[in-house]
Length: 115
Length: 113
Image (tube, rainbow over all chains, first blue to last red; front, side, top):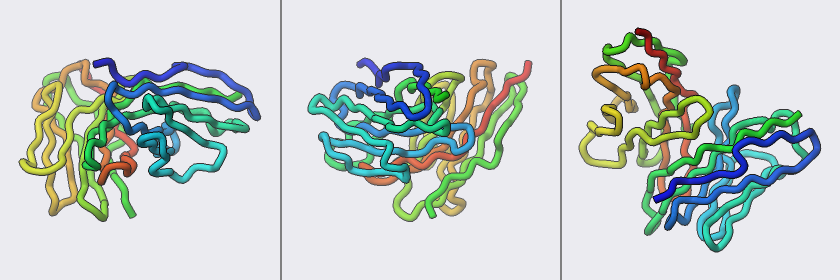
């Protein structure tokens, strides 16, 4: 099976712009989670989508949003970019069959640099 | 509060020597525990996980970890380190479906020859 894919891999934006990142989960996986990784804060949970519904949300401002499509692909959007949004954004997918806990498998990430 | 602590920020081990990376967690519900590894510029690769059952779990690349409920620990071990093991290692705890993984700050492993 192909792993989790994320596009683009690298992105440079300027303050005030918006950005959209894409994630394709492992085939058959219906849950997609997003994490932000920075040197200072480490890995922090952004949100999780399951069957096109946001099921859980981390402690991030409303500038961070996401959605999931019927094929389980997910996008996250950051509006009005700030310098502090520079980070590696990681997407993870899991099967979540029957509501039990499942392993999250991570993609390679999108490296966002805000200038 | 739910948290994961990895006390060692950076560890250097000689090639061929044994390794133990420490992880302590605080979690209100039944913890599901994971170790991930991250090479520079890469995503996270799952090394091993503990959901239930035998408290000593085996993972990929010769790694193992032991869950000790009384100590709230899930330490990662490897009997003989290879130069290719140099990377950053993250311990994480999660709960039921839909809950977020909570990660430690990570331990950077350097391997000396």
